[in-house]
Image: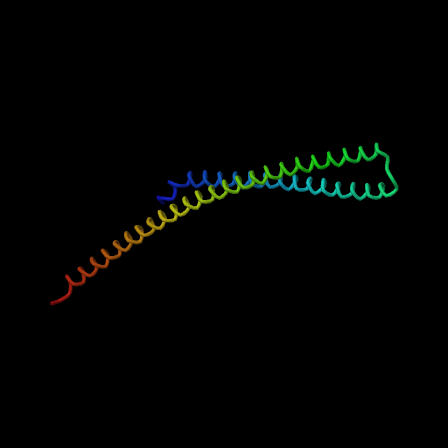
Length: 151
């Protein structure tokens, strides 16, 4: 029986942990991409609103329209600030998920190296055992030849 069966359960568990960590990282990266897309939309909308305001303001504006525009811009800035916080939190989560993936991959690689070493030791023992059998057969054959050879 090969000694690699001892580690099969541990390897499977380590692979599952690594795969789960990769899936979690992918999910957080998707969230981050969505948040970045939302930030880009907010920034684009702000630029468009500024351009429209410049066109409108060139013809003169009422104090009520000016107050409304300022409130609108303030809300957009609040939304951008909120989205900036969201992006920072997601960046921290991505970094944490990446660290978990690296940890899981190191653990898996360690187990794979142990498995490979055990297999190599087993193969070496098998080769030595086969060599011993071959040597004993050759020695026995040599003894038979020398025992039956005329003097």
